[in-house]
Image (cartoon, rainbow, N blue to C red):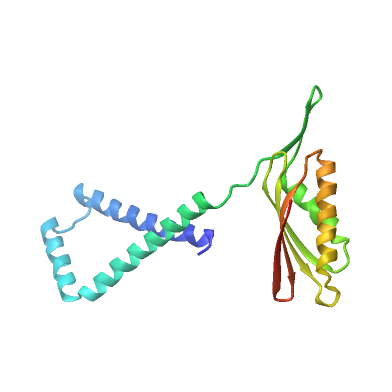
Amino acid sequence: MSRRADRVVIAVLGLVLAGLGTVLVLAAGEVLDLDEPAALLDRAARSIDQRPALWLGLLALAAGLLVATGARVLRRSLLRPSRPAAIELSDGPRGRTRLVPAAIERAVRADLRHVDGIRASRVTLRTTGPRPRLRVVLTLDPALADVAAARAATEAAYRRLATCLALEGVRADLVVRVGKRSTVSRVH
């Protein structure tokens, strides 16, 4: 499920619970003309006795949706790396100079756009610090595929990035895709 689907499931569950709570509050205040609670419970018990498979199925479905949504939200919040903060380039009497991750990603992507054979690139800044970590996914044109040239071009782009940001270096995970094949390498 996507985040939107998670929100829809949580919203529907919230509306059901809010509606049920409203009915119970109105029944307790005798605003709604409902039978005695014992009569309601007796009718519900008879319905469950008559069609147990239906009620167990509904209960299992509701519990499954709750568990799946909760597990997904928990996994996203705990396991997904959060977006790194901006890289601070200088902090002087005239103020601070910072770059947000999106600017760094666009700069590396633009640098790689001019390399022959690279059809597309996707760059993600994973961590910041003296040696930031990038994840670069390159899609090469199968007709012009030269993996060694693409790897050399990315290493040159990393060096230029480190020089521009006045950093010690850049660590990168490089994924090169040619057609359906992928090769993974780590550049330090």
